[in-house]
Image (cartoon, rainbow, N blue to C red; front, top):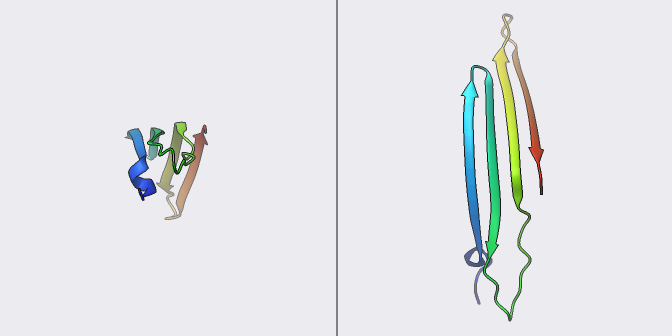
Length: 74
């Protein structure tokens, strides 16, 4: 019996950058499935693309402020 993790190969790439209080990333995740005719499996969803951005800062009064947003296509 072959374990699922040996039959699912992740092709993953990430590009990340920061600018002051902003941090963003662009990621792609695509699964390659090695099928066994006697025990077929359905691969997980691909994420092409996955775009995330985050803002984090501290106010003059010492209050932490953070916002996060993401866009994911399956």
